[in-house]
Image (cartoon, rainbow, N blue to C red):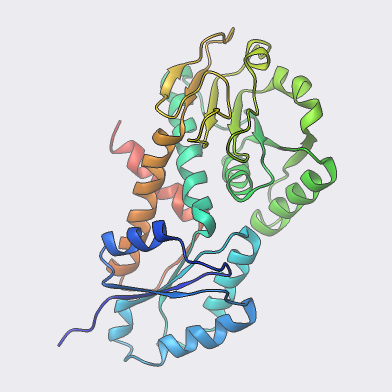
Length: 302
């Protein structure tokens, strides 16, 4: 009798995301078992309980998903899970806290597509503002874009916090190979004048980029908003926009809304969850892999 595909889903939060559970089951995992309020110090014990309960052969039908709300904590838990393996007792692990890694990957991949198709250019050398960028999606998007060669600035209401997050992203996620700048929300009117791309990744119900600021952006090309709840994070960009011209833009900028981004996010998460099932060798997946599959999905659907 073949063993079931079991995904052990760890989160530091009070509840496991129903979205992630549905995604796991739809991707082919038969059982998705929640572990809530998990402390990072508990990861090793949970991982080793999982790997030693099955033969090395049947471990191919076992996986671990790491959720939560903190990107650094999720990456630390992913590294801890990897260190806890005892080959040949080893399973695949996928970190996607609050869906931030796959959402960020979907947004950056969609922006990259619009830059190529509408403006015949790439992310390399572009000036990007991550508005509300101190949160999980903003952090991941900033790192992904910076790794693709963009000049990224994380914008927050508090400059000190924005600097702390930017430094953390550069060192922890970028391994010191990228440099992400920081800026205060109060100064975005100055920053927008040299921006090519804007990511709106703040809390729902807050307009981060007004129509006035859009009109004052002489080289703005693409503005992407992950907020699906009115009012929009970017004036003139609704959830259904997918490379749609932004009314009032003097530079001919186009907008990408939350539903367009969400579709790519869904595909990326689905493909990574399936990859865990299909791989013969354990994989350790995070935002970089999410961006790879998001790009592949877009290329196959151009």
